[in-house]
Amino acid sequence: MKTPFVTQRIYTRPGKINNTSGDFVCLHCEAFVSVEEALSGVRNRNHCPYCLSSRHLDQFEAGDRLSACKAPMRPVGLTIKQIAKKYAGHRQGELMLVHLCQDCGKVSINRIAADDAAEMILSVLEQSAKLDPTTRDLLARNGVVLLSAAQIDLVRQYLFGINYSLSQEG
Ligand SMILES: [Zn+2]
Ligand SMILES: [Zn+2]
Image 1 (cartoon, rainbow, N blue to C red):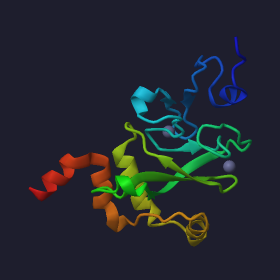
Image 2: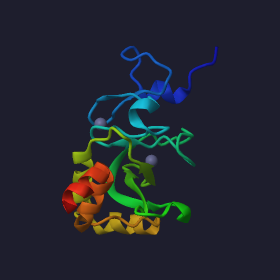
Image 3: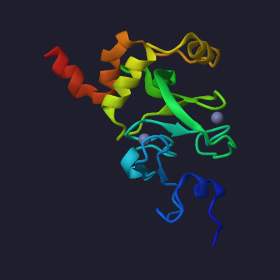
Image 4: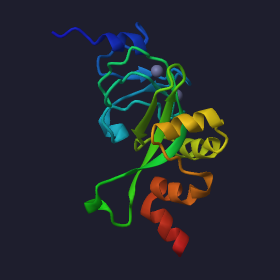
């Protein structure tokens, strides 16, 4: 039998939840979060679906869990990740959440999971309009182009899909 990863001892509460799957308790809202792929639709779920907060666990790539930082990461905005040209039809890219580590300032771009709270995603977009210049500058230096609050219809289309855009046209 393998020894459980050390990180799991840190981001779950010993005694309260006993698992080896990587499920965690959100640092921000204390919700229990399952990393079950069938629920989230993504691998390596790294943020809470209720408040969208994350934790600085990965260093080089999603799921590597190599970071020693472990501080909370807050959602600061939304961006569109460009995808390969052959897929560029009516969609130009994928809507992504931008997280900022509250301790070391690491910026990371994360896929939105199927069960992430849509109203929280819209609220992140709204809040991102009020970001301070230092944070904006940091994001820009990381090559992140934030969506503006004026692009809320685009975001709704990503979140609510084709039915939403059809109902808008009809
Ligand atoms: Zn949470
Ligand atoms: Zn950090």
